[in-house]
Length: 106
Image 1 (tube, rainbow, N blue to C red):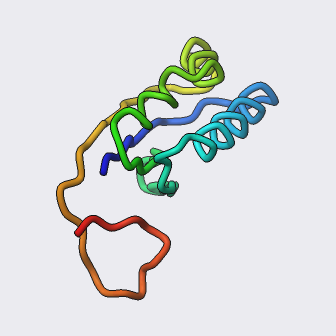
Image 2 (cartoon, rainbow, N blue to C red):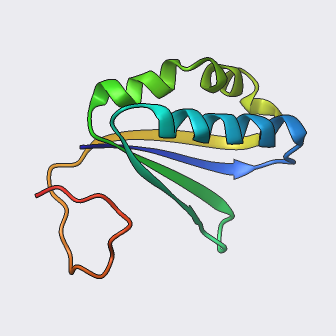
């Protein structure tokens, strides 16, 4: 399993940002191998973290190559102050059975 974590500080979002954000989320969900996502915001520093989970690296790369993702990447300076992307291979995940919305690796 893989995760792609997109960490950023916001500027001003406009209609184009929201349109692309929705299109990218919809495209991700249609890619075979998409496992889920979560969003976190740190109120102390204002950073936002979007984490997508993928069954394979090829599934993740399909989103990276998607035209809407490429469009957003080209225009990121309009909406983002800073950003970083972290691609990780998840070798193990565990916990109790009450947190069910996140994928697990056994």
